[in-house]
Image (cartoon, rainbow, N blue to C red; front, side, top):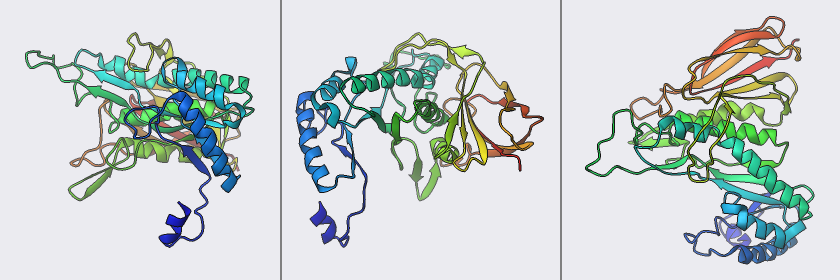
Length: 360
């Protein structure tokens, strides 16, 4: 690879620090797929050679925490042990859905999945520690809503309110922005266990940018990334939340039923320069309607005026299109605080960033 790079005009290395050893090699769709034992052997060999070339790189092992019973990761952790540093995961869940699938049930399954992700990741980390890995790390190297609609038989007639290709959560919709936000929030709560989140993908695949007939526009997830960017380098602080909750009954592909998931998902971070308190608020309930939130920020010496930026859709399937490229974009507003207290109303299907500057 080094010779190939030099032949194309780049004599010096690019300084890439993070390297994932293999991609989805547990799947037969990969040319060089293998078994869990085979991959453990490969990983040891690659790790030895790569670290000999550059001991400062950080290796990510191709994991699969959502494999039934974690069979892949269990074997990898047991065989590699302390030489393993980080496991990757691709959160591509949802599976087949039909017109018989309850729209709110599917939406809530995605909106609450971060809860089960957190539970599973913490369990994987404990197994890594038990195997002698002192500081286990996980990385999400692909993620997006991955439900696939299966058309009804020609003789079946679906009611107007039934789930359809155009009325379901997809990577192009506001649902993807909220899905990403809830997963990000849960990862932040895990105190550094998850060191990387890479969404799928950038252009015309998954959620990101769309191009059609020489026009380019952004999916809502693109704006969600921008809303979350100021959290980088910050310090998470405790949040106490009281609100309604929802539960699900149906199990989707690698998405178990959920109980008592808060309708709001909230996280607070002290900015990297400690100059502001940043709140991220996701309204993830399909049937709660607008929620009026009472804020008590008296523990932070904040200025009397805060900046709010809200990304919201009219329904779970709402999205930007070629005809309406700015249907869903961030909308700024201000919020007045009195002695650190305020009220604000969060619309359904919305993600809001609230920034409270430190008082001067």
